[in-house]
Length: 249
Image (cartoon, rainbow, N blue to C red):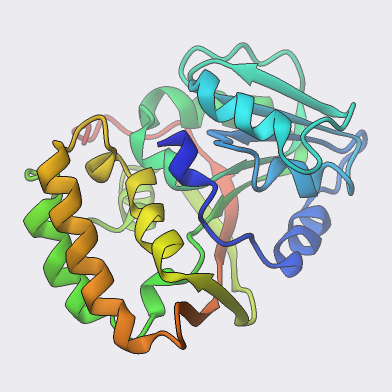
């Protein structure tokens, strides 16, 4: 999964300006919880005093350190789960992305609430707009056939956090579309960064069949071997809360 993760498009520069603008209290310390390969932590570190980049995967952190900006002296890489992380600082901003889906919300969100500075926010960074590609409807019919997460039930993360009184939204913004080009094979491979499509969980025939189905779907949209599509990112920021005793997901 870590090796496949690097195939995702980078975030638009607009995202980092927005995140830096949300970092109001001094010193400007940022926690990137579930940082993966540091796609947020590495660029953001150039705009703040320090970023603590936390992820339970040693492989993700190893790749993040080796990528551009990963050796910045103001990035502290920490290999630890969100639930076990020891908050030894107060943060002006906490950032998390899709990894929040996999965390124990009732443990992590209250911890974040205590760890934020007086004017601090939790910013939830969405994906990179790949769901807006013109072939998305057909892709969404392929994915359930091959995913190893056959019991997955879609849900809206923000709705669930608000219903459980774990998060209070303050603002939301979507970055402007940014055109991105990618070889077809790279696009196909990025799906194996997802939990349900990791090569550790899929057997080889299923992975090959999935790759062939996606490649067949997107090739008519390619110019030669190159796909072109817009990348956008949703950012929601607000206050993490202690929550209610609602049933855990």
